[in-house]
Length: 510
Image (cartoon, rainbow, N blue to C red; front, side, top):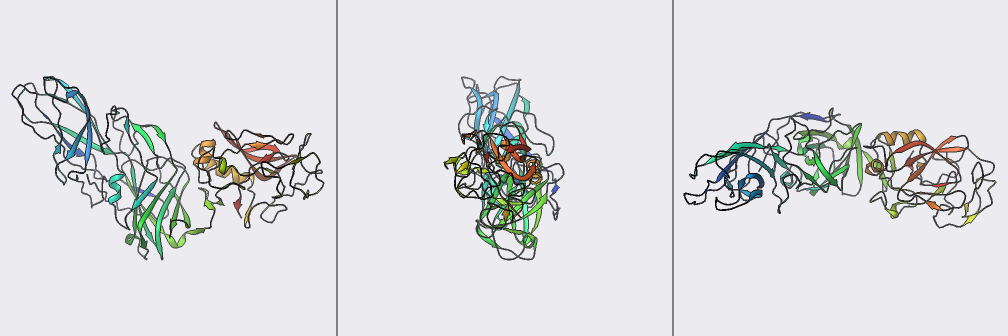
């Protein structure tokens, strides 16, 4: 079923939402021959709640696609067969018989007892099997593909509709009369239309926020009351949640000086992210440039299309191995010593090394490095051993030196050229930009921070990997150093630790 949105407001510095009412199509069961003693077939007709988007954008017209659009219908009172038998209707498959704003639907169900209330529930697109009406499967891919600039056919496979539950009294006779059940459908998701100008090629568009933009699995109870305009439906059991969504163009677009020449469409989960969203543009799908946009007031609303105006010439380039956070800061995309970007909070390949505060990358940070009980009396111990510090102040160096790791040119800075250890306030700003203040929020953020554990200063044992993450800052506080602490229930960017402990390092660009 094709539904379209014709929202005209353009976003220049902010996302701007435009709400347009939605209209939809008709559904009905095909009429099959019946005996006079049979209960009559139920005819289903439906119209959309607003002029919106379902399968493709085409002005403001909404229409079904024949033989392609299929809906699932439920009714515990309607029957799958005639009066001689039949069970309640569970996920009956109905298929559009014609294309257009109005269409009959091919499918079969019968009225149950005469002159009784029948309640009907429905959704699109049809999911095979017999899920209960309270656990209809739903998903929204984070990786989306658009054929070319301005093409919107891919929206068909991403959209999801839920009908407002409707109750109808069944006929009081057994004649094969037509009895209509009118269903009004509502969108589950949100559409973004990126209008992009600039020069050169465009291969992909990425959006990042601190809310769930996509998910690989979950369920929806389609018997729930229809939310108010723009308000999200309640979903359950979401898995594979992502705070990023990417649309890749199969055929790259050539940008022009006019925004409307290049449009890219993205479907996202409605939500209320805070602060900024990051928009990234790629010419080849691997190298990116970025810019920030403020989140629209009230967040992304269900059933709305947002028009986002983007000037590619104002985007800043990202280098290999770099990622931009929602604060606009550029970071390394992985921990020092990690072999890849974290795939989960407990991805061991993304844990990386564990540094004693202020030491250079001299080999001590390797998790299997040897140890020595001898404290260093200079900034360069001259060996690759982890130095055991068994008494206060638990520092690998005696006397201490507060001037290590200070800035991009700081002594012993272990980060790549142009990067440095973040300050405590920078870690705090990142933490405050997350969707949740815990290890889940840390991993869902653009930084994808895992839980590498730490290394004890007294016996060099590695503890809490997979359950805790601790990340050094460059900020000194007495004998301690501030660090970012992550556990499943909380995150704290003003935690402190002794300098002799081995903690993770994530570098920020100067």
